[in-house]
Length: 237
Image 1 (cartoon, rainbow, N blue to C red):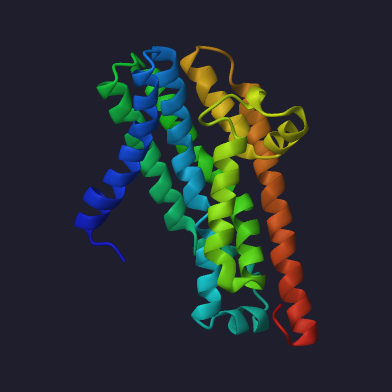
Image 2 (cartoon, helix red, strand yellow; image 1 turned 90 degrees about the vertical axis):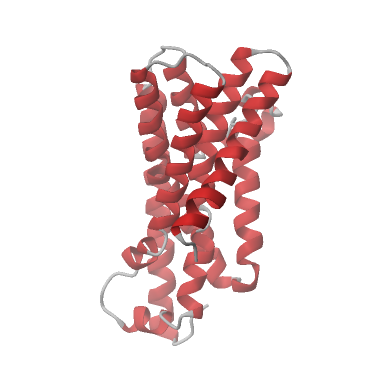
């Protein structure tokens, strides 16, 4: 639990420093394009990483003793699972936006007001397209509650490696690239970089929304089927 002081200075400060760290790598190699590339990628990672805390949030439903009530209730369980995770999504989006705005000023990247606003909008869209993937990690955490931290960390590692945040997806081995295409963050990062390059974004934005909503549909089905099976058998597993 954070106070306003610890959340603003310590937590947000750490996340913004992490985003700036990647931009500093670009500055170290003396390439302004690399600074922009890394700053945008790291800023988009922040809200995506936040959605992976859904694993711990859904596990918290078990430890708080709420699962039996959710199983016995006729109300859908998906909104309850989603609601436990909203604050993490907002937290990451704020960190990513601050990292972009501060990084643009500190590293003198030259993003205009329209570009900054578009990038911030994409940062806040990131949790929307990524929450389905986070909920899928959460459903796995209900089956392996002792491994929820491991699952969340593994999911964040996959995002960092396969979504093109710190290096182009084209550098991945060919047989691994399809993994990138089924992750909404890959397409959203492409859209963000298209904004900085003044290129069309609608195709990548549409793909991000399409893939993201597909993950939401799968997560909703997984949660609903798990609860329906528990109602039939009397065992939550």
